[in-house]
Amino acid sequence: MTFTIERHYDIKFMGAVSSNFTKILALHDAHDINALWNKTAAVSFIESKQDPDGAFTDPGLTAEVILALSSKGLGAIRNLDCGKLDTDYENHVDLDGLTKSLQYHGNDSDPRNVTITYTLWVGTNITENYTLAITAPRNSSFYNIMQMAMEADPKFSFEASEWPNGHYVHTLAGYKEEPMGYHYWLLYRLPEVPDPLAPPANHMVAPVGVDDLLIEEGDHYLFWYKKL
Image (cartoon, rainbow, N blue to C red; front, side, top):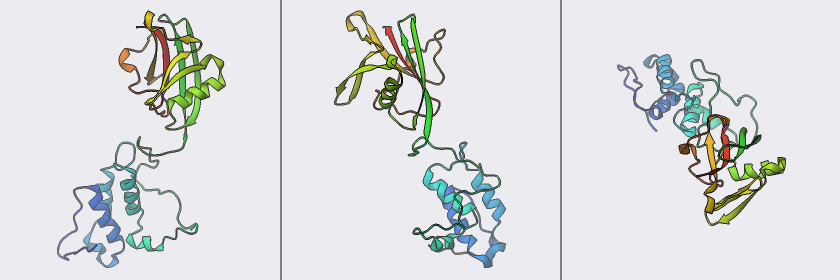
């Protein structure tokens, strides 16, 4: 990649982040033209494009921006040795004005554990109420959470039919669905622990089944046996 620099023009930084971090990487190694660009202004422009969670659109672009802002130019890439550990390179970047801890986007494959709650309500009038807090790897399926809950507390025992598109839970805590009486188990995904005095509305019912419902930190799940 070649950059042509006219000595009588200032180098401008504008437009997409993806085009500007490349300029910064190249200019870090062009020591004889430092007077032609304003590093402080360039970094400020990049920081202004930062997402609220600290990232820059996606993990790939975020990694490239951090390399550009860490004052290691394109020339630093040739010094990388993937076959050994170099203690001169730390595994974090501390930059003034940049969010220090980059939070995770929902589409990354992060193996860290998260904590959720899982509640059972029995009856339209909620005559039985059980809740467990469970810690499991992020993006585990809710079906796996149900299996963990059953091992931790017999009240959360369940039975399910297996279909080509996943499991259909028909029995929980000894209560089986009764289609003739319109009694069904409904699964809700909620932003807080469910309150029997303020039951969730029907629009809070989970949009997918137990196999496709993936857990996130702070999720609260409710299986409610009620008459429709």
